[in-house]
Image 1 (cartoon, one colour):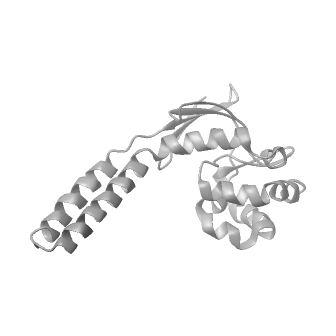
Image 2 (cartoon, rainbow, N blue to C red; image 1 turned 30 degrees about the horizontal axis):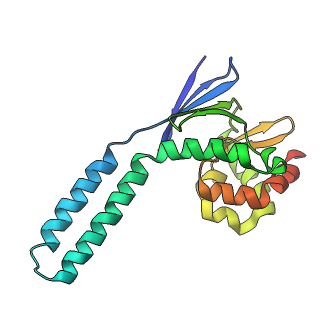
Image 3 (cartoon, one colour; image 1 turned 180 degrees about the vertical axis):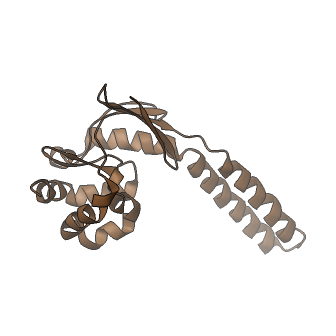
Length: 186
């Protein structure tokens, strides 16, 4: 049986019978719509002014709006690519905390080992275990550490299923082995 979940930047297709998960990047149109709206609405307000300073501010705004739209449009691709690349290069001690990512097709899709996500009723318990190790660092990446479904409790210890975020990777770089070791015996 297949199970399909939609995240903000990826669609996850779990195939437990094959022991894999396929993470497909979502292409979102709304960042382009927001970009158009930002540029047109803000342009109508700012450009009637003949001030060079106003026009310069508008161009800076347009540049940052394009950058933001680009990042949001391709977020699923970058998360997939970052997750695969991180798994390949991370310290082997920290890798024990990661659910293995086997393959990435240029960030379009990833193939990861299947792991049954933790039941949401155990989320607080799991978060407190991680908080004992990493403390305040978890607050900078609250989504990944407070949502129990981002983890799998394997026989050898907990595994993080979603680690495509830079903030998540920084925490794993610093505390990965300790998070795995201190949480596996519970």
